[in-house]
Amino acid sequence: MSDTAIRVDGLSKRYRIGLKEQVHDTLGGAVADFATRPIRNLRRLRKLSKFSEDGHDPDDVIWAVRDVSFEVAQGEIVGLIGRNGAGKSTLLKILSRITDPTRGRVELSGRVSALLEVGTGFHPELTGRENIYMNGSVLGMRKKEIDRKFDEIVDFSEVERFIDTPVKRYSSGMTVRLAFSVAAHLEPEILLVDEVLAVGDFKFQEKCIGKIKDVTSGGRTVLFVSHNMGSIQKLCSRALLVHEGEILRDGPTRDVIATYLSLGAEHVGVRVWKDVSSAPGNDMARMQAVRVLDQDGRPCTDFDVRDPVFIQMAYWVLRGLEWLDVSFYFYNERGELVFMAVDDSMDTPSGKKNRSAGFYRSTCAIPPDLLNNGQVFVLAALTDGMTVHTIQRDVVMFNVLDAMDPKGARSNYVADWPATAVRPRMSWTAERFPIEQDIGAVTGEDHRVA
Image (tube, rainbow, N blue to C red; front, side, top):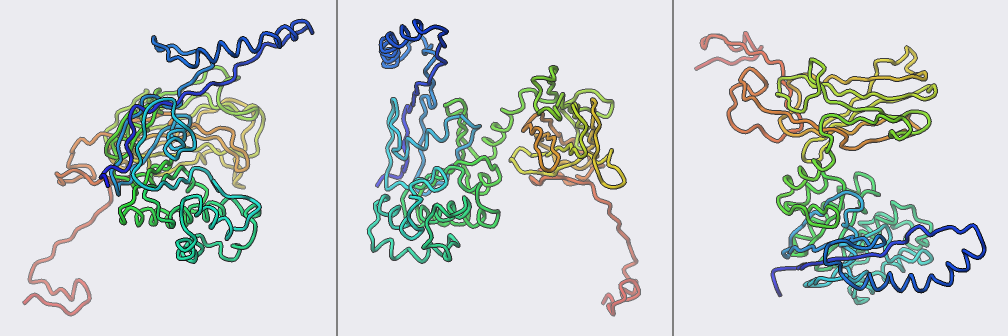
């Protein structure tokens, strides 16, 4: 068997989308439209059957995947990341043979198991037990093989009590537990996983990550799609970044994640919405701007580790609110949440966060000697506990630079600082005593220097 488990060469997938139809005011116009529609559709199909030589496709044609090529070795876990609509799920559907490519070639060495959506391949009227056997049969497993793995599957999924209950009565979390357990335990050579772990609780997610690691230790291959950069970082040493249907970057996970996060920071240190009607939010609160500022109040994107950083949000409260949380979430270049901050400057003595109608600015001051060097990405949110008015991910970003100053947290440590989330400057004390000093007098213990 070849050492390459997945080989993709020049893969493309094209879809025809529906265009807005003209609405006719008269019966005659509607009849004429109905009569000529077959001809128009035929013309569209003819256009669709040809590739545009100048790169301009008809308005009703989109490329979900375009000229994608890569290889995955046996036993490798590769992360597939990208924004919603980038083409990740389409790519996995082609690899799992759910849909055919428009052009290009895919070679798969071994049996493929795909977990693309919660409960994919499960019949809601069948019990969990029946779905395990049905799903296993679809994957090409014999009954004896499923019998051998059955108890292990049920135990891992933690749904033993409900195994003879129809799946339609399962919660989404129970369904994904069982679906993942089946896919992971029926020993496929290639496992395709698409964001399903986001449904389970944290403990189960960690359990699944451990299982995926076990799967690859047996020589099997995993292609793992997730928006959770922490999971990608834990599982994958290599990642592919899909952007607008193409592979934008292929390389070490940390480098690919940094590129992915930087895509969301086109506005870098400042993002402004001038028109209240189109600003993100709703009829209660809308965001007007998010800015990264230096200590003089000027827009800035490069800071020394010893510098304070100020993140400011301007926003409209369009009608009085009894409660409004203005919050920032700070992520490092590995996609890890470093910390979050919530504005408590206007809290009332009773703890309420009242906001009357008006225009506001809230500023969060990050103290010096706290952040480690690297890129920092900011998520800004306006919420009230029950309602999410708006969440803007990666709305701004800034860089923290290492000046190698021994007066900071680094002291005289000259090597690269570890990739920790933060680098706080701590308060230290040190005392010196004469070597002949009675240690017991200092520590209260009976020790003496020989």
